Length: 459
Image (cartoon, rainbow, N blue to C red; front, side, top):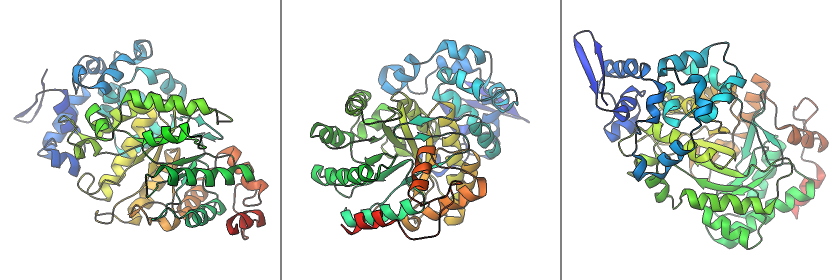
Protein backbone atom coordinates (compact mmCIF):
# COMPACT_ATOMS: atom_id res chain seq x y z
CA UNK A 1 0.00 0.00 0.00
CA UNK A 2 1.07 3.61 -0.50
CA UNK A 3 1.44 6.34 2.11
CA UNK A 4 0.76 10.05 1.60
CA UNK A 5 1.52 13.20 3.55
CA UNK A 6 0.71 16.82 2.69
CA UNK A 7 2.86 19.75 3.74
CA UNK A 8 1.43 23.10 2.62
CA UNK A 9 0.35 22.73 -0.99
CA UNK A 10 2.59 19.77 -1.71
CA UNK A 11 1.54 16.12 -1.24
CA UNK A 12 4.26 13.51 -0.95
CA UNK A 13 3.55 9.94 -1.98
CA UNK A 14 5.53 6.93 -0.73
CA UNK A 15 4.82 3.83 -2.78
CA UNK A 16 5.33 1.25 -0.03
CA UNK A 17 6.61 0.75 3.52
CA UNK A 18 10.15 0.16 2.25
CA UNK A 19 10.23 3.55 0.56
CA UNK A 20 8.63 5.27 3.56
CA UNK A 21 11.25 3.90 5.94
CA UNK A 22 14.07 4.96 3.62
CA UNK A 23 12.79 8.49 3.09
CA UNK A 24 12.25 8.95 6.86
CA UNK A 25 15.86 8.05 7.66
CA UNK A 26 18.32 10.73 8.76
CA UNK A 27 20.68 11.68 5.94
CA UNK A 28 23.58 9.29 5.36
CA UNK A 29 25.91 8.72 2.46
CA UNK A 30 25.06 5.03 2.04
CA UNK A 31 21.40 5.75 1.35
CA UNK A 32 22.45 8.48 -1.08
CA UNK A 33 24.68 5.94 -2.84
CA UNK A 34 21.76 3.52 -3.01
CA UNK A 35 19.42 6.21 -4.34
CA UNK A 36 16.80 5.68 -1.62
CA UNK A 37 17.20 8.78 0.55
CA UNK A 38 14.83 11.74 0.70
CA UNK A 39 15.60 14.38 -1.93
CA UNK A 40 14.88 17.30 0.39
CA UNK A 41 14.52 17.90 4.11
CA UNK A 42 10.84 18.66 3.52
CA UNK A 43 10.34 15.23 1.95
CA UNK A 44 12.16 13.68 4.96
CA UNK A 45 9.81 15.49 7.36
CA UNK A 46 6.79 14.37 5.34
CA UNK A 47 8.00 10.78 5.50
CA UNK A 48 8.47 11.00 9.27
CA UNK A 49 4.95 12.41 9.66
CA UNK A 50 3.48 9.63 7.53
CA UNK A 51 5.54 6.97 9.32
CA UNK A 52 4.33 8.17 12.71
CA UNK A 53 0.77 7.32 11.66
CA UNK A 54 1.51 3.75 10.55
CA UNK A 55 0.04 1.11 12.91
CA UNK A 56 2.64 -1.26 14.30
CA UNK A 57 0.56 -4.22 13.12
CA UNK A 58 1.25 -3.11 9.51
CA UNK A 59 4.80 -4.41 9.87
CA UNK A 60 3.40 -7.93 10.33
CA UNK A 61 1.60 -7.88 6.99
CA UNK A 62 3.84 -5.77 4.75
CA UNK A 63 7.38 -7.16 4.50
CA UNK A 64 10.15 -4.90 3.20
CA UNK A 65 11.79 -7.99 1.66
CA UNK A 66 9.38 -10.74 0.54
CA UNK A 67 8.94 -13.76 2.80
CA UNK A 68 9.37 -16.14 -0.11
CA UNK A 69 12.86 -15.00 -1.12
CA UNK A 70 14.59 -14.20 2.17
CA UNK A 71 15.22 -16.47 5.16
CA UNK A 72 15.80 -13.50 7.46
CA UNK A 73 12.27 -12.27 6.71
CA UNK A 74 10.98 -15.77 7.42
CA UNK A 75 12.87 -15.81 10.73
CA UNK A 76 11.40 -12.44 11.72
CA UNK A 77 7.82 -13.42 10.92
CA UNK A 78 7.93 -17.01 12.15
CA UNK A 79 9.56 -16.12 15.50
CA UNK A 80 7.26 -13.17 16.23
CA UNK A 81 5.30 -13.53 19.47
CA UNK A 82 1.75 -12.20 19.17
CA UNK A 83 1.34 -12.64 22.91
CA UNK A 84 4.23 -10.29 23.66
CA UNK A 85 2.98 -7.91 20.95
CA UNK A 86 -0.53 -7.68 22.40
CA UNK A 87 0.40 -4.99 24.93
CA UNK A 88 1.41 -2.55 22.17
CA UNK A 89 -0.55 -3.90 19.18
CA UNK A 90 -2.97 -0.95 19.18
CA UNK A 91 -0.19 1.65 18.81
CA UNK A 92 1.05 3.53 15.79
CA UNK A 93 4.78 4.15 15.32
CA UNK A 94 4.33 7.63 16.80
CA UNK A 95 2.35 6.27 19.75
CA UNK A 96 5.06 3.65 20.25
CA UNK A 97 7.66 6.41 20.53
CA UNK A 98 5.60 8.13 23.20
CA UNK A 99 5.12 4.83 25.05
CA UNK A 100 8.86 4.13 25.03
CA UNK A 101 9.68 7.57 26.40
CA UNK A 102 7.00 7.57 29.12
CA UNK A 103 8.24 7.45 32.71
CA UNK A 104 5.73 4.67 33.36
CA UNK A 105 7.43 2.42 30.77
CA UNK A 106 10.20 0.77 32.77
CA UNK A 107 12.69 -2.01 32.12
CA UNK A 108 10.14 -4.70 32.96
CA UNK A 109 7.71 -3.34 30.37
CA UNK A 110 10.42 -3.21 27.68
CA UNK A 111 11.45 -6.78 28.44
CA UNK A 112 7.81 -7.96 28.28
CA UNK A 113 7.33 -6.73 24.71
CA UNK A 114 10.74 -7.74 23.33
CA UNK A 115 9.60 -10.91 21.54
CA UNK A 116 6.70 -8.96 20.03
CA UNK A 117 8.94 -6.44 18.28
CA UNK A 118 10.19 -6.86 14.73
CA UNK A 119 13.35 -5.14 13.48
CA UNK A 120 11.29 -3.00 11.13
CA UNK A 121 9.11 -1.71 13.99
CA UNK A 122 12.20 -0.81 15.98
CA UNK A 123 13.98 0.79 13.02
CA UNK A 124 10.84 2.81 12.27
CA UNK A 125 10.50 4.28 15.73
CA UNK A 126 14.21 5.12 15.87
CA UNK A 127 13.74 7.31 12.79
CA UNK A 128 11.33 9.51 14.77
CA UNK A 129 13.69 9.96 17.70
CA UNK A 130 16.29 12.53 18.60
CA UNK A 131 19.65 11.36 19.92
CA UNK A 132 18.58 11.99 23.51
CA UNK A 133 15.51 9.79 22.99
CA UNK A 134 17.69 6.93 21.74
CA UNK A 135 19.90 7.26 24.82
CA UNK A 136 17.05 7.51 27.34
CA UNK A 137 15.22 4.41 26.12
CA UNK A 138 18.34 2.28 25.63
CA UNK A 139 19.43 3.03 29.19
CA UNK A 140 16.09 1.63 30.42
CA UNK A 141 16.66 -1.68 28.60
CA UNK A 142 19.59 -3.68 30.02
CA UNK A 143 20.51 -6.94 28.29
CA UNK A 144 22.57 -9.21 30.54
CA UNK A 145 24.62 -12.17 29.27
CA UNK A 146 27.00 -14.67 30.84
CA UNK A 147 29.82 -17.04 29.92
CA UNK A 148 32.69 -16.80 32.44
CA UNK A 149 31.53 -13.44 33.74
CA UNK A 150 28.44 -11.26 33.74
CA UNK A 151 28.15 -8.56 31.06
CA UNK A 152 25.55 -5.80 30.65
CA UNK A 153 24.52 -5.07 34.24
CA UNK A 154 23.21 -1.52 34.79
CA UNK A 155 26.05 0.77 35.79
CA UNK A 156 28.65 -1.54 34.23
CA UNK A 157 30.57 -1.44 30.95
CA UNK A 158 32.93 -4.08 29.63
CA UNK A 159 35.83 -3.85 27.17
CA UNK A 160 36.92 -6.19 24.41
CA UNK A 161 40.71 -6.29 24.57
CA UNK A 162 41.80 -6.32 20.90
CA UNK A 163 45.56 -7.09 20.72
CA UNK A 164 45.84 -7.47 16.95
CA UNK A 165 49.20 -7.89 15.19
CA UNK A 166 49.93 -7.55 11.44
CA UNK A 167 51.79 -10.90 11.31
CA UNK A 168 50.01 -12.74 14.17
CA UNK A 169 53.25 -12.66 16.16
CA UNK A 170 52.40 -14.42 19.42
CA UNK A 171 54.76 -12.34 21.56
CA UNK A 172 53.52 -9.10 20.04
CA UNK A 173 49.93 -10.11 20.74
CA UNK A 174 50.83 -11.21 24.26
CA UNK A 175 52.50 -7.84 24.96
CA UNK A 176 49.40 -5.92 23.87
CA UNK A 177 47.21 -8.31 25.86
CA UNK A 178 49.22 -7.75 29.05
CA UNK A 179 49.18 -3.99 28.45
CA UNK A 180 45.39 -4.03 28.18
CA UNK A 181 44.93 -6.16 31.28
CA UNK A 182 47.06 -3.71 33.28
CA UNK A 183 44.57 -1.00 32.28
CA UNK A 184 41.70 -3.19 33.49
CA UNK A 185 40.47 -4.11 30.00
CA UNK A 186 39.41 -7.53 28.75
CA UNK A 187 36.25 -8.40 30.67
CA UNK A 188 34.09 -8.58 27.51
CA UNK A 189 36.69 -10.86 25.97
CA UNK A 190 40.21 -11.06 24.62
CA UNK A 191 39.48 -11.08 20.91
CA UNK A 192 42.02 -11.26 18.09
CA UNK A 193 41.41 -10.47 14.42
CA UNK A 194 43.92 -12.86 12.81
CA UNK A 195 45.99 -11.73 9.85
CA UNK A 196 45.86 -15.31 8.55
CA UNK A 197 42.99 -17.79 8.23
CA UNK A 198 45.41 -20.69 8.64
CA UNK A 199 43.89 -23.21 11.05
CA UNK A 200 47.27 -23.80 12.69
CA UNK A 201 47.80 -20.06 13.26
CA UNK A 202 44.30 -19.71 14.69
CA UNK A 203 44.84 -22.68 17.01
CA UNK A 204 48.18 -21.27 18.19
CA UNK A 205 46.51 -18.04 19.24
CA UNK A 206 43.64 -19.84 20.98
CA UNK A 207 46.06 -22.03 22.91
CA UNK A 208 48.18 -19.05 23.96
CA UNK A 209 45.23 -17.12 25.39
CA UNK A 210 43.74 -20.19 27.04
CA UNK A 211 47.06 -21.10 28.65
CA UNK A 212 47.25 -17.62 30.15
CA UNK A 213 43.61 -17.67 31.25
CA UNK A 214 43.90 -21.00 32.99
CA UNK A 215 47.28 -20.27 34.58
CA UNK A 216 46.01 -17.10 36.25
CA UNK A 217 42.35 -18.09 36.58
CA UNK A 218 41.13 -15.08 34.58
CA UNK A 219 37.31 -14.88 34.48
CA UNK A 220 36.99 -13.85 30.85
CA UNK A 221 36.60 -15.48 27.44
CA UNK A 222 38.68 -15.63 24.28
CA UNK A 223 37.87 -15.45 20.60
CA UNK A 224 39.80 -15.55 17.34
CA UNK A 225 37.64 -13.81 14.76
CA UNK A 226 37.87 -16.23 11.86
CA UNK A 227 35.10 -17.51 9.61
CA UNK A 228 32.65 -19.74 11.40
CA UNK A 229 33.65 -22.76 9.30
CA UNK A 230 37.22 -22.39 10.56
CA UNK A 231 35.95 -22.26 14.13
CA UNK A 232 33.93 -25.44 13.62
CA UNK A 233 37.04 -27.11 12.22
CA UNK A 234 39.08 -25.89 15.21
CA UNK A 235 36.46 -27.32 17.59
CA UNK A 236 36.59 -30.66 15.77
CA UNK A 237 40.38 -30.71 16.24
CA UNK A 238 40.07 -30.07 19.98
CA UNK A 239 41.14 -26.40 20.06
CA UNK A 240 40.14 -24.46 23.21
CA UNK A 241 37.32 -22.41 21.63
CA UNK A 242 35.31 -20.18 23.95
CA UNK A 243 33.30 -17.83 21.73
CA UNK A 244 32.15 -18.53 18.18
CA UNK A 245 32.46 -15.48 15.91
CA UNK A 246 30.77 -14.48 12.67
CA UNK A 247 29.99 -11.28 10.78
CA UNK A 248 26.29 -11.21 9.94
CA UNK A 249 23.85 -9.02 8.03
CA UNK A 250 20.14 -8.42 7.66
CA UNK A 251 19.36 -10.18 4.39
CA UNK A 252 19.84 -13.74 3.19
CA UNK A 253 21.79 -12.53 0.15
CA UNK A 254 24.19 -10.46 2.28
CA UNK A 255 24.77 -13.37 4.65
CA UNK A 256 25.45 -15.57 1.65
CA UNK A 257 28.15 -13.11 0.60
CA UNK A 258 29.73 -13.77 4.02
CA UNK A 259 29.47 -17.50 3.35
CA UNK A 260 26.89 -18.17 6.05
CA UNK A 261 23.27 -19.15 6.48
CA UNK A 262 20.97 -19.62 9.46
CA UNK A 263 21.57 -23.36 9.26
CA UNK A 264 25.34 -22.93 9.38
CA UNK A 265 25.08 -20.54 12.35
CA UNK A 266 22.94 -23.11 14.14
CA UNK A 267 25.57 -25.77 13.51
CA UNK A 268 28.30 -23.50 14.88
CA UNK A 269 26.23 -22.59 17.93
CA UNK A 270 25.62 -26.24 18.73
CA UNK A 271 29.32 -27.04 18.25
CA UNK A 272 30.26 -24.32 20.72
CA UNK A 273 27.70 -25.50 23.26
CA UNK A 274 29.02 -29.04 23.02
CA UNK A 275 32.32 -27.94 24.61
CA UNK A 276 30.58 -26.76 27.81
CA UNK A 277 33.33 -24.24 28.57
CA UNK A 278 31.16 -21.57 30.20
CA UNK A 279 31.18 -21.33 34.00
CA UNK A 280 28.43 -18.83 34.85
CA UNK A 281 26.42 -19.17 31.62
CA UNK A 282 26.28 -20.58 28.09
CA UNK A 283 25.99 -17.44 25.94
CA UNK A 284 28.86 -18.01 23.51
CA UNK A 285 28.17 -16.44 20.12
CA UNK A 286 29.94 -13.22 19.13
CA UNK A 287 28.50 -11.36 16.13
CA UNK A 288 29.71 -8.25 14.34
CA UNK A 289 27.55 -6.01 12.17
CA UNK A 290 27.68 -2.55 10.63
CA UNK A 291 25.44 -0.27 8.61
CA UNK A 292 26.16 -0.58 4.91
CA UNK A 293 27.24 -4.21 4.65
CA UNK A 294 24.10 -5.20 2.74
CA UNK A 295 24.54 -2.34 0.26
CA UNK A 296 28.25 -3.13 -0.21
CA UNK A 297 27.23 -6.68 -1.19
CA UNK A 298 24.45 -5.42 -3.52
CA UNK A 299 22.09 -7.33 -1.24
CA UNK A 300 19.90 -4.60 0.27
CA UNK A 301 16.84 -5.07 -1.99
CA UNK A 302 16.29 -1.29 -2.00
CA UNK A 303 15.93 -1.16 1.79
CA UNK A 304 17.71 1.64 3.64
CA UNK A 305 20.93 0.67 5.38
CA UNK A 306 19.74 1.24 8.94
CA UNK A 307 16.65 -0.97 8.53
CA UNK A 308 18.87 -3.66 6.99
CA UNK A 309 21.22 -3.37 9.95
CA UNK A 310 18.45 -3.87 12.50
CA UNK A 311 17.23 -6.94 10.62
CA UNK A 312 20.67 -8.39 11.34
CA UNK A 313 19.89 -8.19 15.06
CA UNK A 314 17.03 -10.64 14.53
CA UNK A 315 19.63 -13.08 13.21
CA UNK A 316 21.82 -12.42 16.25
CA UNK A 317 19.16 -12.86 18.92
CA UNK A 318 18.16 -16.24 17.47
CA UNK A 319 21.42 -17.68 18.83
CA UNK A 320 21.57 -16.12 22.32
CA UNK A 321 24.86 -14.24 21.80
CA UNK A 322 27.17 -13.11 24.56
CA UNK A 323 28.16 -10.02 22.59
CA UNK A 324 26.98 -8.20 19.47
CA UNK A 325 29.24 -5.48 18.11
CA UNK A 326 28.24 -2.78 15.66
CA UNK A 327 31.56 -1.79 14.07
CA UNK A 328 29.97 1.52 13.35
CA UNK A 329 32.40 3.48 11.15
CA UNK A 330 34.53 0.66 9.81
CA UNK A 331 33.09 0.27 6.31
CA UNK A 332 33.98 3.86 5.43
CA UNK A 333 32.59 7.25 4.36
CA UNK A 334 30.74 5.75 1.40
CA UNK A 335 28.19 4.57 3.99
CA UNK A 336 28.66 6.93 6.96
CA UNK A 337 30.34 10.06 5.66
CA UNK A 338 31.40 12.00 8.72
CA UNK A 339 31.44 12.16 12.51
CA UNK A 340 27.85 13.33 12.67
CA UNK A 341 26.56 10.35 10.68
CA UNK A 342 28.75 7.90 12.64
CA UNK A 343 27.50 9.23 15.98
CA UNK A 344 23.87 8.99 14.91
CA UNK A 345 24.35 5.47 13.54
CA UNK A 346 26.03 4.27 16.72
CA UNK A 347 23.17 5.54 18.88
CA UNK A 348 20.57 4.03 16.53
CA UNK A 349 22.27 0.64 16.47
CA UNK A 350 22.60 0.50 20.25
CA UNK A 351 18.99 1.56 20.83
CA UNK A 352 17.56 -0.85 18.25
CA UNK A 353 19.64 -3.77 19.44
CA UNK A 354 18.72 -3.26 23.07
CA UNK A 355 14.98 -3.03 22.27
CA UNK A 356 15.27 -6.36 20.45
CA UNK A 357 16.97 -7.92 23.47
CA UNK A 358 20.42 -8.05 21.88
CA UNK A 359 23.55 -7.44 24.05
CA UNK A 360 24.87 -4.47 22.08
CA UNK A 361 28.36 -3.14 22.17
CA UNK A 362 30.00 -0.72 19.78
CA UNK A 363 33.36 -0.44 18.10
CA UNK A 364 33.45 3.36 18.16
CA UNK A 365 35.59 3.82 15.09
CA UNK A 366 36.32 5.48 11.78
CA UNK A 367 38.58 4.94 8.78
CA UNK A 368 41.29 7.45 7.99
CA UNK A 369 39.55 8.75 4.86
CA UNK A 370 36.31 9.61 6.69
CA UNK A 371 35.45 13.17 7.70
CA UNK A 372 35.83 12.30 11.38
CA UNK A 373 38.43 12.46 14.12
CA UNK A 374 39.04 11.27 17.66
CA UNK A 375 36.95 14.08 19.13
CA UNK A 376 33.94 12.62 17.32
CA UNK A 377 34.75 9.25 18.85
CA UNK A 378 35.02 10.87 22.31
CA UNK A 379 31.53 12.27 21.80
CA UNK A 380 30.03 8.93 20.75
CA UNK A 381 31.86 7.11 23.55
CA UNK A 382 30.39 9.49 26.11
CA UNK A 383 26.87 9.24 24.70
CA UNK A 384 26.99 5.44 24.58
CA UNK A 385 28.39 5.34 28.11
CA UNK A 386 25.38 7.32 29.29
CA UNK A 387 23.13 4.90 27.37
CA UNK A 388 24.74 1.94 29.22
CA UNK A 389 26.39 0.26 26.23
CA UNK A 390 27.41 -3.31 27.07
CA UNK A 391 30.98 -3.01 25.85
CA UNK A 392 33.46 -1.03 23.76
CA UNK A 393 36.88 -1.81 22.21
CA UNK A 394 40.24 -1.49 23.92
CA UNK A 395 43.06 -1.14 21.37
CA UNK A 396 46.65 0.00 22.05
CA UNK A 397 46.72 3.72 21.29
CA UNK A 398 43.27 3.45 19.63
CA UNK A 399 45.11 2.63 16.37
CA UNK A 400 44.70 -0.92 15.11
CA UNK A 401 48.01 -1.79 13.40
CA UNK A 402 46.53 -4.79 11.59
CA UNK A 403 43.14 -3.54 10.42
CA UNK A 404 44.36 0.07 9.89
CA UNK A 405 41.48 1.99 11.42
CA UNK A 406 40.93 4.21 14.47
CA UNK A 407 38.95 3.01 17.48
CA UNK A 408 39.04 3.47 21.27
CA UNK A 409 42.02 2.88 23.52
CA UNK A 410 42.63 1.42 26.97
CA UNK A 411 42.86 5.01 28.22
CA UNK A 412 39.47 5.87 26.69
CA UNK A 413 37.89 3.11 28.77
CA UNK A 414 39.43 4.63 31.91
CA UNK A 415 38.03 8.04 30.95
CA UNK A 416 34.46 6.87 30.57
CA UNK A 417 34.60 4.76 33.74
CA UNK A 418 35.86 7.72 35.76
CA UNK A 419 33.39 10.21 34.32
CA UNK A 420 30.29 8.00 34.66
CA UNK A 421 31.32 5.66 37.47
CA UNK A 422 30.96 2.56 35.30
CA UNK A 423 32.25 -0.73 36.73
CA UNK A 424 33.66 -3.80 35.01
CA UNK A 425 32.07 -7.25 35.02
CA UNK A 426 31.93 -8.16 38.74
CA UNK A 427 33.90 -11.40 38.40
CA UNK A 428 36.64 -9.68 36.39
CA UNK A 429 36.85 -6.75 38.77
CA UNK A 430 37.33 -9.16 41.68
CA UNK A 431 40.19 -10.79 39.73
CA UNK A 432 41.86 -7.41 39.13
CA UNK A 433 41.72 -6.77 42.86
CA UNK A 434 43.16 -10.21 43.68
CA UNK A 435 46.06 -9.53 41.27
CA UNK A 436 46.59 -6.07 42.81
CA UNK A 437 45.90 -4.39 39.47
CA UNK A 438 42.90 -2.47 40.85
CA UNK A 439 41.55 -1.54 44.28
CA UNK A 440 38.10 -2.49 45.67
CA UNK A 441 36.57 0.56 43.96
CA UNK A 442 37.85 -0.63 40.59
CA UNK A 443 40.48 2.13 40.43
CA UNK A 444 43.85 1.10 38.98
CA UNK A 445 46.80 0.81 41.33
CA UNK A 446 49.86 2.77 40.26
CA UNK A 447 52.56 0.16 39.88
CA UNK A 448 54.12 -2.18 37.34
CA UNK A 449 52.62 -5.48 36.25
CA UNK A 450 52.50 -8.22 38.90
CA UNK A 451 55.58 -10.44 38.84
CA UNK A 452 53.71 -13.62 37.76
CA UNK A 453 52.37 -11.85 34.67
CA UNK A 454 55.82 -10.52 33.80
CA UNK A 455 57.27 -14.02 34.17
CA UNK A 456 54.62 -15.40 31.79
CA UNK A 457 55.42 -12.69 29.27
CA UNK A 458 59.17 -13.33 29.40
CA UNK A 459 58.58 -17.06 28.89
